[in-house]
Image 1 (cartoon, rainbow, N blue to C red):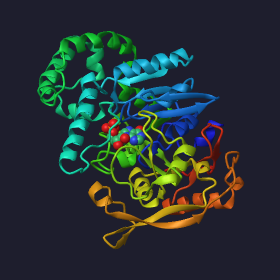
Image 2: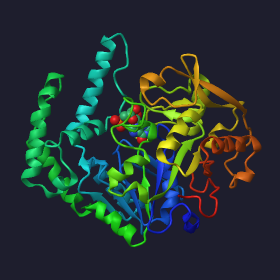
Image 3: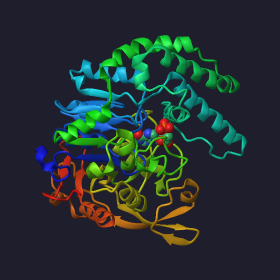
Image 4: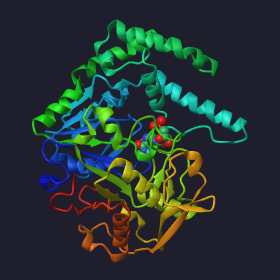
Length: 453
Ligand code: IMP
């Protein structure tokens, strides 16, 4: 695909972003992969190995968790920014796996300011969830766990806020007394709680030893990515930001407390990368033609039973990171309008439209009813959202196999109706429509010229 097609999205010396508009797993990886050749750098600004991108390209399937998808393209810098959290063991694993398949990993850089996910953060994540679940049961079955990916994300961001016990990538690769003191301090602070909840006390010296060879491996990749990104932009280059997780999981703007611990929406780009939001010329919001969610928390349009299982199987809706079956729901336009608003979305990519083929009818939630009152506003607080019941518009289903369609005009009218409905609801063009997992199975509907900011 000709990268100049994306000039309207992101002129030279500017940045664009790809963000998930729902609860994750919208298929962002494929769009980052598609757009990447038109950019000089692809950067992550949030999250860690809780995110999972599966990219199918040239018949090869790549599952990435930490490394930005841009790595698959020659000449594109793959940047892990300061707002991300890095599990160094996982990162080395991904680097080795990519290298083994002939991918050049020299283009990868990691911020000195990104926080390190330590082995104890993963242990704490699992233990916290177990304790909360148990307490929930004791309290009469109420939900008091989040259903995290257990990748240590929450405890690492909590450590970041605690400060003196936190380790950043710069500390890790520098080694020496700062690293050792911080690990000892962290263990000293956390061990009492670990032991009190039935866990085994951790040994700081063993962790420091374990980290040494990993730090050695990662040293060449660690740098000041804030300057690096600004240097790219000042030289007239383009930067594409790749959001991990998704807007409704954003710690501030998502369905709190059933969220992740980072700023996943485009609002997190500034603090998570050092590049001001004003430099963003385009924000591509990725949305599925239906809704999925993993983990706990309210989901007004959730469906169960046979229909949910059909969609789950057709869409391969099982977690990339944890393998958990995803919860399935109809498209929620109330949530989507909210996500498009807070992200400043300029274009939309609708993915997985092919998955809905063959259903008798397709439902779309256009409003909620809360305590008998109709509203078109999203309720990001989980306790409020749990009281919302969806008001549906019912569209007739389409029977045709659309996986071979390459233009909106080729789509059957009933499938196109869903695309039109989303365009009208969000007021931005649906610039991409996904009709299958392969990079080629994408309808490009990008208006030529001037649709960005
Ligand atoms: P954590 O990010 O592991 O703390 O998990 C917090 C919540 O976010 C849980 O409900 C997870 O299932 C969910 N979550 C985190 N990352 C993703 C993702 O990339 N896709 C879907 N859900 C996610």
